[in-house]
Amino acid sequence: MKIPVFRVGLIATASFLPLSLIALIVFLAIYSWPAIQFNQFHFLWTNDWNLGNLYGNPVTVHGAQIMPGAKYGIWFLVVGTIVSSALAMVMAMPVAIGAAYFLSEGVRKSWAGPLSLFVDLLAAIPSVVYGLWGYALLVPLFGQTIFPFLANTFSFIPFLNGDPGSGYGLLTSAFVLAVMIIPLISATLREAIRMTEPELKEAGLSLGLNRLEVFWHITLPKLKTVLIGVGILALGRALGETMAVLMVSGNALNYLPNNIYAPISTMAAFIASQLDSALQDPTNMAVEALSEIALVLLLITVAVNIAARLLLWMARVR
Amino acid sequence: MAIKAIERNVSVRTSTKGFKVSLSRRVMTAFAWMFVVFSFLFVAAMFISIIGDVLVHAWPALTPKLLTDITNGIGGGLKNAIEGTMVMSVGALLLAAPIGIAAGIYLSEHGHGGAGKMLRFLSDVLVGIPSIVLGYVGYITMVIYLGWQFSVAAGIITLTVMLLPYIARSTELAMANIPLAVREAGYGLGAGEGRVVLHILLPGAAPAIMTGLFYAVALSMGETAPLLYTAGWSNYMWNGRFTKEPIGYLTYVVWTFINEPFAESHMLAFAAAFLITAGVLILILVGRWLLVRGQRRMGVYQG
Image 1 (spheres, rainbow over the protein chains, first blue to last red):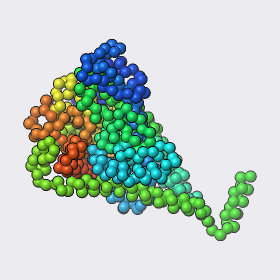
Image 2: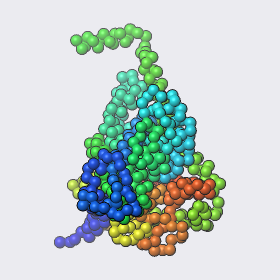
Image 3: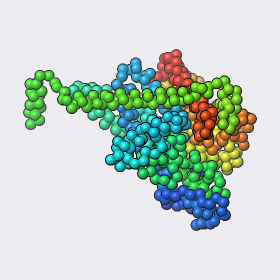
Image 4: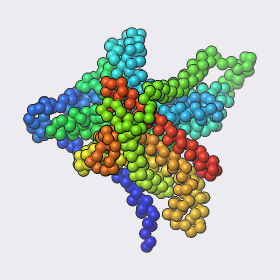
């Protein structure tokens, strides 16, 4: 039998892709195993991240060596991550739908190409540049003008009133995240709108609906699954965003936000900002606890992505 | 009953003069139009504001000194960072392109069975993994466990894992756009699978694959999080060693120097941000232009 050299080579090279994913998960799980054993599950819902007394002698608690007083609880990160991403979704979704409609049906074809470049290039801007923009432009603008105005005007609405803060915080992070995910949602949606059967739109038009009503009553309900799928996909991106959030979130520690202007921190940003101080821990438990955060973040985003892919796969859009 | 109801409606409609759109519908439509136009203008305004903000702040710092000096603690030039960014992007591309293209070819040519579906699914999952998690795994495996310390190789490999799914996806789409008849013609002339793929399909899909590669390079240039704890940072030029030698890169300058209290550092951070943004946008535009030109020249395979 002749060995199909080409195919074997192809499969061998291609297999690096799934192998790297599996290696990623396995190594992370192995490395964070001591921290998982030590922290158990209340890790997730206690609100107490404390490296302990780094100048003391290590003590043994529950069979693990840690620094005296060290505690690892990340409830504030869970809250910060989920609330900022959810807020970003709420802000991004309507605008993304509007922009997708505008570019696919609102303007004539010859204009749509150049104008959609704005959206496509916005998606390409590096996240650290978003962070810089947020840090240099949004934080002063929001902190000095917009947040105090909002807090005064809507003082009767819970979570919108109270101390407007310095500009670093939940709403600024959510705004930057929203600007980052609008182009993602918008691009897929534009494609999906273009692929909708013209017969449906024509049927709507012939019943006397105008184009926007056709979009609202016919096209959009038809694209419900796509919309949810791509929304979850964008949510996954927002959950894992690091640099932009790191630069505008205020990096709160052990602090739960009491209104939308309060400083927060997210899991991804926390991993990036805390490794230096975690390395000071001679028992290595802090680094392992950070890797447990990375594992939690990984599992959340993988779950979110699987859900989104299943939905999009059912809707036959990829 | 139904017929009667319809008749009654029709008679009502025809009896009034023409078809009148109710006020509430007209108001709603006007509002919706305003919102649609607003949302596009919002996106465009955000884009212009980001580019404008970076450009305005970076303008005074854009001097030849950027390209000739290396960074020091608070200022200097960006020569070492530019070199580092290029080394790592090109290195990651050289590693990721063969694997990603092979995976893309497999997906488009044999991707309809169970293994193909699995590969596609895993590739989609890999896209969704946050880049900081990739960086952290790179840190615990290569920097600590393999003892490479902060090094070029650790940075390149971490970036490679990040780029793989993007390259695989763009290659798959490019290959899938080639009609089946082209493959049949190749096999009909007695060519083996290797010859069909390498000499017939790949040249035909080359413009689209190139666009994907340009996009991947742009993506790797703009990444910070996976490099923070794998490539480290160095104020000096790269000395050619792959392990145990950290390297500088532009995105690190953006995020670190903006936190320094000196105006000179801030200017350098904005200059670095400008260089990255310009590089990324130019790569993507050139990639698109190549695609359009390639399609025009070939005339087929547009999908």
